[in-house]
Length: 398
Image (cartoon, rainbow, N blue to C red):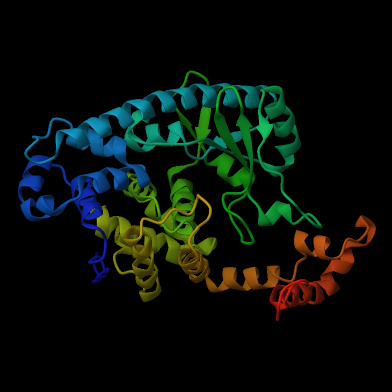
């Protein structure tokens, strides 16, 4: 980068440091020979654990197969090979379902964009086997949500989560509903927003207008333009603290393509994701040696601070998707996500706290016809819940 960044990488586990060196190198044997000191210190079981946690074992296997046992123990290659094969079958299974659902949606005149899954693997890596995915993510217009729910039921899917809502807050506070097929064992997230609200983002019609068609399947399957994909992947990865290295490698792969960086710059500015975009570029450049676009060669100090703050997730092998999340990690993540927000997004978030929550209905159930009263009552209901939380419960000693 044009500006010195100086990320604090000294506390990243040596196993992950080795993984980063392997993934960012073209000549693996030569790179490994120059890392004798690091290789001698590596806990190879932890190396495999890191590869699984960060969901990058397919790429590691591709890089390391055929490498001499003198550098990488045979059991490590065998473990990665087995995981690679299992992932290949899973991604092919998801690819078939992605095509069937996309065809069904088109037959019902429902426009849909695939956000991740096999189509992203094919688009960024040229091979569905080189990226992992646990589910399918589809973006639709919110006006088609009821139609899609009927269609998913028709296809044997069951709604896997039910959103509690008051006064229609689900439309902007949430961004997807999850469906699960009990026989096929496939999870599908149907999105009506790219990210949870509040906050401005491109409309579905804008994204659809700029869409691309992928050649992975016989039937048409659509995905975001590369510039829209950059905004989505950057905001998604940042929101999860880049706690899976896979998301950052996606960014590196995307940055190696010929994006219209002026469009990317304008999108990030327009939707108040600029510091998040710069954070992703800094991390991909410093950790994976990605190519830096000229428009982002001199990141601002806030973006550098955000990039340094994300190193915490690599130091601690953070898993935000399995409860319970340790308290110190949950607290750090909550604070970090808030610092990611631009001034405008922080203001919107703070204002949104005055909008009623479903918890207000639980605290004081009211008839639906007078739910508007939750607006003036919200500060009192919030205060009452906080007071109850600190008061001793009946039957407990003071």
